[in-house]
Length: 78
Image 1 (cartoon, rainbow, N blue to C red):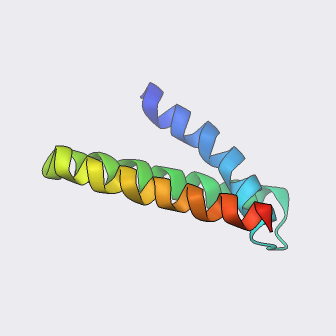
Image 2: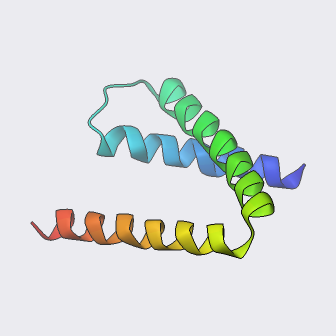
Image 3: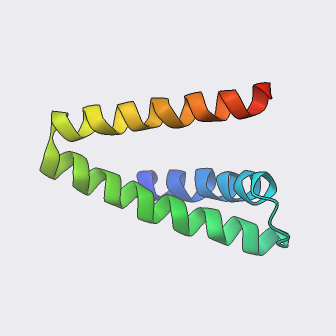
């Protein structure tokens, strides 16, 4: 239960940030709802993937995450 609550809090903040980064004109409740739903879906999907796929999937996701971070860094440096 605590994990779901944490996903909700993180999701609300992520939704606010994501709508601003994507240039989406959304009001506060909508932005928070988008983030909460995204965090819950992503969090549960990630748990399922990690449980089913094990370490290989975790490694692939880590590489993808690093690639996204590198891409973001390159965008900020422009």
